[in-house]
Length: 486
Image 1 (cartoon, rainbow, N blue to C red):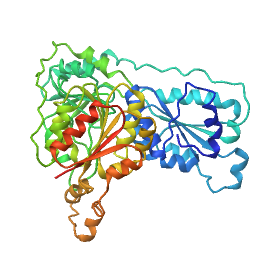
Image 2 (image 1 turned 45 degrees about the vertical axis):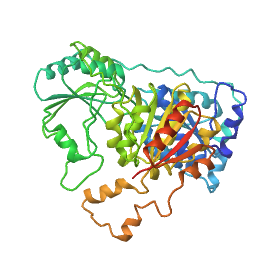
Image 3 (image 1 turned 90 degrees about the horizontal axis):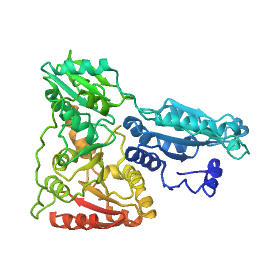
Image 4 (image 1 turned 180 degrees about the vertical axis):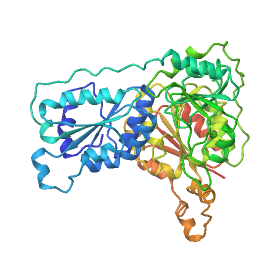
């Protein structure tokens, strides 16, 4: 929460409802991102409490990411007292219009007696399925007025299994050559992956899922590549694509002379399970073969000492990551090499970028740690992206959350170096270069972390990084490692 004047009665109510836990965040984008992380791990909605339209606007980027992750979130937004709206005070805005940019479920409370029913409706709307950001807007005079009306307890609607016809169509398609299965939504858990492996066909996963089972011993369903020049040949021979809580794969951005859809023209899309259906159950109904034998690779060894590169950093993470840990990703340009190595790490769950709005990594890790206090959480964060929501470190320190943050310090918006060439702009003169260089002056992540109350260290060699990371895995509480890349 990050409340203001209109929400003071909600803050005071925390004293009377001990089962509700409040986490103060120093920026609204941390609130919305942390709620997303909590929902991804627990499957239940966290609530955010934000101040009027501008407070909601500050949280919109991570609400957008949560919408793409299909995370259930309850967004409580204060509003001016109803008589005060007519005076057009400085903070007056169209709160519902802000909310509708990230949700179709927007409810404005109509009276004090309506608060309870409105909140119940909002919780039910958030749960879905498939899950969404649901907003309830509460004018201040309704929150400070007495009422004896309470809303009903919201009931989660379980995901329904697809009809038999959908399973039959998918089974028929699997008999034809050129058929592949695309997993998305919740159908990327360990159970779903095991069932997909028993279909005996080509299986792949969407990139922008909320949370995916990863690591050794898991069925290795590759992700659809990020860049179109890799995604197009990856999918070139697919004639029928079975969608499991997924949609047809598209390019993140438009590029000259490049199609938006990554599947070939004429590729037939066969829906096994819609976004709101039980994709895991559908895969288990579809699977008929025996469990697929998986390679039992040994844990990777630590790399030899030397300068810290993406490869040596990835090898180190894969060797030292504990089993059942949660990994929050916002590595951006570093992700491809690191993920190749994390496939060989101990079994864990990986929370990738979903909507692409920068600033999700640290807050998602924060929320994950709140949802799963017994599991180690690791945030893999680019240095530029981390600056969007570094306030999350303060909340981690305040609550002693068990999060280890690795900052990939390359001192640039490196992804924009790549995109400058790929878009055909090709204009990296000294002025344009200044728009992607974040090394002048260099960001001091150790100092920034200490300033927020989180212990931190800097690593420029493999030995330094492995020592710091191994130590962090043995201890409880927030730690940050600035990994200076060669």
